Amino acid sequence: MDSLLSEMDFETLGSGEFLASPDAVRNVIGNDKVYVLDVRTDVEASHLQYPFAMHIPLDALPRRVEEVPDDRMVIVFAGTPFQAAVGYYYLRQAGLDEVKTYVAGSEALATALKPSPLYLNQ
Amino acid sequence: MLDIDAPLRSLTPHAVFHGDSHISPELGAMAFWKDYVFWLDVRTPEEKDHGRFSYAYSVPLNDLSSINLIPPAQSYVIPFSGSTFRTGVAWFWLNAMGYQRVFALPSPIEKMLVKLDVAALRERGIQFGCCSEKVLGEQARPITNKESNMTKIHEVMQELDFEYLGAGKHAVTERDFLGMVHDKNVFFLDVRTDEELGCSSYPWAYHIPLHQLPGRIEELPKDKLIVPFCSSVFRASITWAWLKGKGFEQVKTLIIGTETIATLLKPASLFAMGNSLSTPVSRSTYSKTPQCCAAR
Image (tube, rainbow over all chains, first blue to last red; front, top):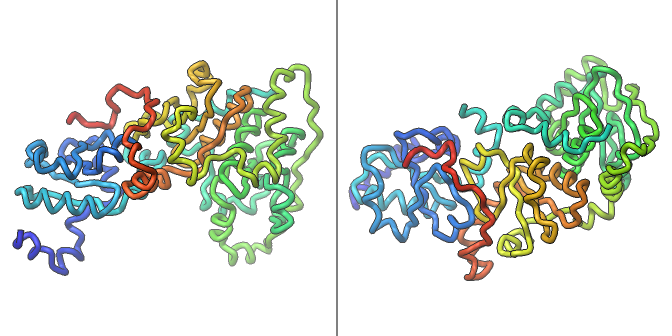
C-alpha cells in the first residue's frame, strides 16, 4: 500500500500514465486486449448500461476481484472520478499492474459515444 | 408532395454517422457568404425584435408550412434557430416537402458567426447584410385535396409560435426527466442507431432506430406520453414532429443530450430522487449482444 502511494510523485502524475481519456475508452471498444471495468453502483447500472464494459460495483469488488483478468490492461470506469480512483487503488493493491483510471466523468464519455466520434472508430 | 415518412427514412445509420443532415459551424462559416447558400431563420418574430440576422431569410416556424419557398436551382437551404428542437422540426418539414440540399445548423448561430473570418470578408468587400440581395422566392402554399389526409402536420406546425415554444409545451427538461423515468405512463423512445445502443443503453427506454419508425409505428402506445430522445436533440425533434403529424396527441421531446442524462444518472441525483429508484420502468427491447461488446 505504501509503495503504491510512493509511486505517485509529480512526474508520474504529470505524465498521466494512470489515466485513460474518453477517446481512449472509445478506441478500445471491441478490443479484446483491454478490459473495461465499470465500478458504478447497481442503481446507476440499472439506469444506464455500457455493454462494452464488465460491471462489478465497488462494494462487490473485494469478493469478485478474481473475475478481473490479470493478463490484460484494465481501465477502471465510473460516473464520477472518485469511484474510479477507488477502484483503481483497490485493483493495484490486489496485485494488478496494468491498470488505468477513467477520470473524465460520464458526460465526456457520452460525447465520445455520439455518432460522429463513433464513426471515427471505424 | 408531402411525405412525412421520407425525412425519417433518409436518416439511415449511414446518414447519421456521416452527418448527412447537418452542417457544422466551421463549414457554415466557409459557406456563409456564398450566393447559393440560403440561411433560413425560423425564429419567432418576438425573438427577431431582439436581434436580427440581416443575411438570413426569415420565415417563422409556424408560418413555414403555409408557404412554398422557391430556392434557385442547385442552391442550399440551411435552417437555423435558437434551439435544436426548432431547427430539427424545420429540417423535417423541408425534407417532407421534398426540398433538396437542406442542411440543418443544429448548433446556435453564434457558434458559426465566431468562426467567420472577418478580415477575409472585409477584403472581399463583404459585410453583414450583404446577402439580403439574394432572392429566395416565396408564395402561398394551398393545401391540396391530395394532401387532405396530411393536414395534421400542417396544423401542428402552425401551433409552434412564441407562446407555445416559450411555455415549453413540446419539451421535457432536465428538471422533469428523472421523475418520468419511473413513471409507467411515460414511454421513452430511444431513436438512436443500433451501433450507438451497443455502446450505451438505457433500460428505461424502448428502442426503435429513427429510420425504422415508419414501419414500426404499431409498436407505439396511444395512451401514454411518448418522449423521444437521441444523443443530442436533433433526431428526437424530428421524431416529435413525425409523431404529432401521425396523430399522436401526447408527445414531448427530451431536450437534453446524453451528457446531461449522464449527469442525472449519477449517485447524487439518483439518491436525491428517493430510495425506490433502483428499478426504473423497464421498456427495453434490446436483448441481443451488441456488436461492439467484445466476448467477455
